Image (tube, rainbow, N blue to C red; front, side, top):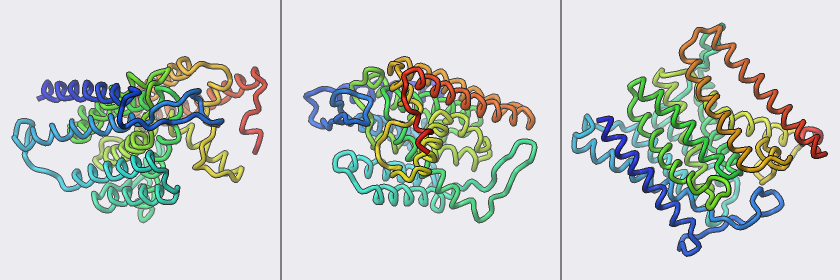
Length: 357
């Protein structure tokens, strides 16, 4: 059965690669360009329909796995309603985001859609973060705060993925690495539906990444970034709900995105800026502006992603004291990285955003 799943994954990877290549060609009928502006890191128009390739290949892989399940070739023929609802919410967000790519929707409409999809997962599928594990302290029960905090987590993961999709190969690489770790953890724990969704995200993003690596021939657009962000948030909650891990594991895995986006958002909020507007204040953007090439920056981010994923695996295998040490160690590393970005900006005589507070 493992061989069959891997074969399907390879087919989905090839399909994603083929569709992405087609969408990146000038002759593509679905050609929608992302024109550069003063806030962009790219210098010429680039197609932003790569999310279609991710969605199409992901859906094709999911449909194939479903048909095999119905036929009984991959186990029980039964379906779990909550799983179907999760899939429905994933594609609900993707379709609305696809419309947003073609005809820009108001931020309020996008936000309401994200909340509605999150409510579908929380109240429809019953996926709620009911407690928060604090190493050396114990489990803190969230009570009535569980549902709203879970909705907040889903909405934030959806949007931060969109915020962080601003550099060649960045969001695609985070998907391959982040969902790769989630898939391995879920498969090892015996949670095959979760492992399947994560694996399909890996191969769908992998085919896209081939044409998105620096210099990018295509971007994923909102349809791809919000879909992957919502999926990352949902699988995180699923793992917590199933008792596979506590919330710190997915936080560690996706921390390259979570830390950068959260700090940048808080900084902009404190300055009273409109956080939904495009900007170039994320740490990865600041590194490029400070003189690092796209390729060098994204390769450094890949190394960080792999280290964060490995730290999450280590976190699952050690005691409470070591878990706390891992969390504090990661926080210290991010502090050093932030200082490194500041030093790079100083060498270029650039004014760091923090000084505008």
